[in-house]
Amino acid sequence: MSQPILVVDHVQMLFFDLAEGPFEALEDATFEVMPNEFVCLIGPSGCGKSTLLRILGGLLQPTGGRVWFNGAPLEGPQEHIGFVFQHANLMPWRTALANVMLPLEIQGVPRAEAERRADEMLHLVGLGAYTEMLPRDLSGGMRQRVALARALIYDPDVLLLDEPFGALDALTRERMSWELLNLWQARQKTVLMVTHDIQEAILLSDRVLTMSRRPGRVEHEVVIDLPRPRTVDSLYTTRFIELTHTLRDSLR
Ligand SMILES: Nc1ncnc2c1ncn2[C@@H]1O[C@H](COP(=O)(O)OP(=O)(O)OP(=O)(O)O)[C@@H](O)[C@H]1O
Ligand SMILES: [Mg+2]
Image 1 (cartoon, protein in one colour):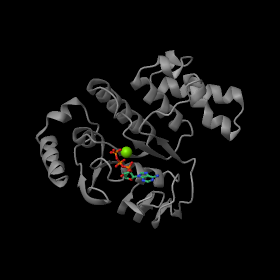
Image 2: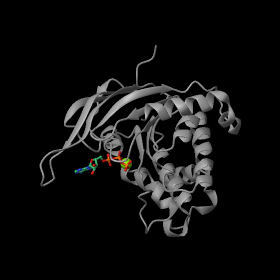
Image 3: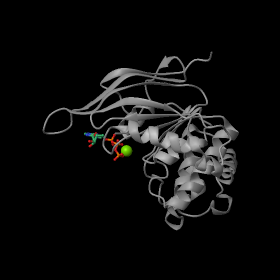
Image 4: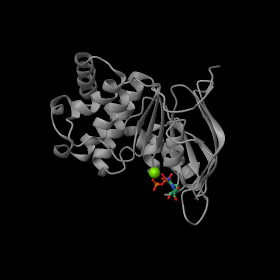
């Protein structure tokens, strides 16, 4: 048996920066993620999903509990963990290519190599023809794909995705889901993705974790036993519909 890549052990988050006193954003998150698993996290707005992801990305220190990454305590940002934020967060004055190159520049990778790798990554997410465009000239879906390419450039073991398709229309969103699924299948990564969309969660993941209202707790786990590779037809199977009901019930 392999070891979990992520262990989240009674993680709690209080914020102390408010005038009204301490604010409990996250009460108890406890779960594990295995290598190459695709796990979705679903829960009501404000229950602490983004807070939890920021903790797992090493961007925020929890006020209680512990996170373990590959058997060691997580103590800050890790190049093996890539992050796509709820909003694409691109630098407006940098082209798509220059945005994707940024993490490599910070790492001190020589320019020619950084350019080559960024270009390759943009091709992988289907933006080979848009490398020289500025974010303002790209569509919302394209911007999210640039952000995804930027997260993939390190070839991280774990991808933390915070509603990466949240702002997109239904059709673009579905296309992006398939692309993400292909990418995950081809590159064997561990993915933890926040979504509000029950169908998206079932279509993509091996397991869905549900959270309660604020202060958030990870409450239930639904194992998605649909066979892979999944296709459009998976959406119309009896099992898919059963799982939709199960998940909807555990969110009540
Ligand atoms: N730095 C902070 N200081 C104080 N409160 C914060 C801070 N960051 C988040 N919060 C609060 O913590 C709670 C959880 O926020 P979070 O962004 O994690 O929710 P979420 O589940 O991601 O919501 P959504 O689905 O709307 O994105 C919210 O009430 C938010 O106002
Ligand atoms: Mg959020």
